[in-house]
Image (cartoon, rainbow, N blue to C red; front, side, top):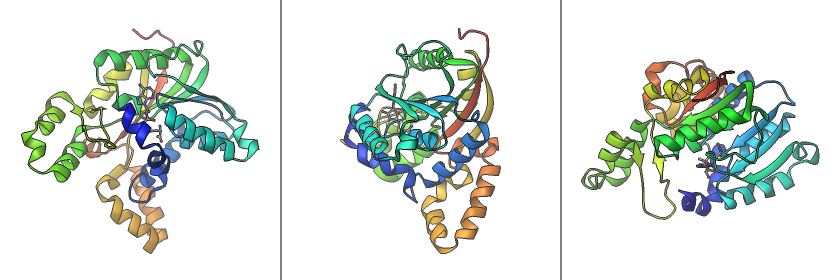
Length: 277
Ligand SMILES: C[S@@+](CC[C@H](N)C(=O)[O-])C[C@H]1O[C@@H](n2cnc3c(N)ncnc32)[C@H](O)[C@@H]1O
């Protein structure tokens, strides 16, 4: 997994602005963050923040941001982007540091008002690793602070694996591993790998059993997950219809009937005063 991000750092940096790839996720996540985050200059940890795309978005809005990630190559991309940003925003980025979501010991207890964790939970493949990341998120947040995390449900990944590999997806056991173990691995260089897939029904317990209350669960690409190239074409052809469709996608993103077929789910959870078990 780390090799994948090391090799694809530049590509990852552009992902959220590519119309047929991350643009819908970007639009819907931005709306959710605007609604849910405490006002600036709250202190925010962008944990697994990779190339710093959301770090810069937060810094532009006056938040004091710390960016952590496992990948040195992605952190280098982030440092370059921050250095190129206007100084009045760049100064809001307080630190850019290599850290694993399972070990945030560089940060004291209750040191952040909110934490983005958009990545680690779909790469931590054991129950104990995910639990450790939840415990660390709880520890570094102040009581009442927000954890905003993504998880990846299995079915979209399953279908895209078969569309890409055909029968080999079945004969190699890739489909069975997704269905039975929630694991997605692709040994080819430069391919998304080391993925852990979480069923929507299991999301609430992951956080609520360990000191959080889930406030919202949203489909990151809403009802548009399966039509992103067509939605990108609509954005060019009819920008007004595109904006209105995004409005509908955001309004319906909390509908549980679409969650299982979403690419990612965005979890907004409040840190309770009780300790994580
Ligand atoms: C798909 S990228 C998302 C980057 C960024 N959060 C965004 O939304 O643009 C997933 C990120 O999670 C990071 N990551 C995965 N496991 C991690 C862990 N255990 N601790 C810290 N970062 C991790 C990867 O290095 C990568 O930067």
